[in-house]
Image 1 (cartoon, rainbow, N blue to C red):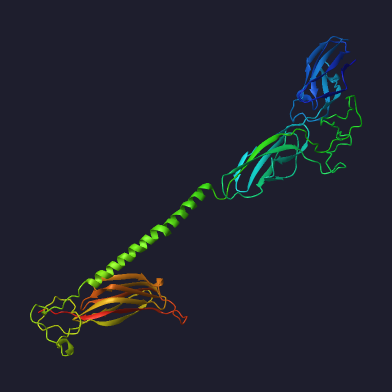
Image 2: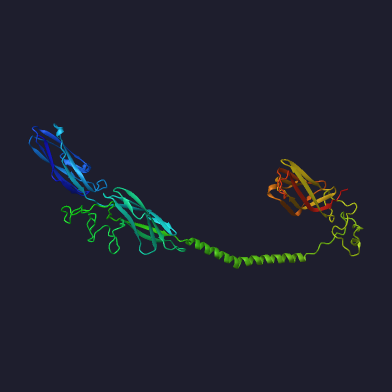
Length: 490
């Protein structure tokens, strides 16, 4: 005595998203009342149900239940042939378990999901895009991008050329849109285009005319078991009544669905419109300057110069003073300048000596006594030491300095401070110069007994023209100016 179970159909075909049913007949050949648990086993268990899932049978009786197959339309329901088993487990005699089997064929379907990111790009010449593709079908497939545009303004490049995807797998293809020529001036131009995501053309299997047949025969029927319309025949004949010499499918059969994506490339001009307006305004300003402003400025400057020359020519020369410096009698002519006392002669500035008994404040130079004079201050300083060189103005004299030349011929490093009396003229770093000169239109006046000082702080002796580093810092200061007598008070 045993338990017997039999499926109604030994083979079933079901499409993802559809429903197929068959029957299961269970017979109790035991001499006891038995309860049976019905459980689906195998690859189809996830989407197959038995109704009811438990039956109780008297001895010698049987019962037929419904087996319902409903594979989802998703990559989880892979296309192909799968075994279906129903385990019939007796409750009282579990050792008499039986598993009737059948073959379930899941038909293939093709579905792609694609997106273009970003949809719009801006650039001078090219724009780059990313196309993400996901295979939502239940068979592997090779996909490719076919960009197109109305006209011939853009050129496209796709990397990689084809992409193989397993069911449920995602991938990315890169697309570059490039304009054929630059736009130098004007407004941005919009170039819309479309991208078709579809099956990749096979590398081989071209027809007699050179076009790819995609693995189809001369009658247009797919060699992998697909009909001329791209639908799978599952190895059956045109009526679907059994095998008709089915051929094994390739690794990546082509997909039939073709999503269409919209993209746009906005080409920008090299020189925008606002820049052209700015250049035009600048050119107009330059033309206005050369045509109107510049001649007016030159004319005004010329008139001012001519007026200054005319005023200088019309002003009378100052008359010589008739009295001495203290308002007394005129000074006697100098023995060294006899022309000063000749009839009708005129004393030259600085040609005579001050009259006896003349009064003047201390430190005031006597006009006409100034003589060009120069002096040199030589300062040598040991390394990391400080030294001072001075020049003292003679007693009874005043020194009007007009030129100072400082020489750092060795290229020493340190600090040089020049003072005249109580006045600091300048402080300068030695490494910033080799020869430095100063000139004044209004002289720096140094009174009698005052000194001109060169204070040198040596940080590092330099290297003179001989090429051997010196052991000490050495600076020279040359003073030039006018040395004049000072009026002495009573």
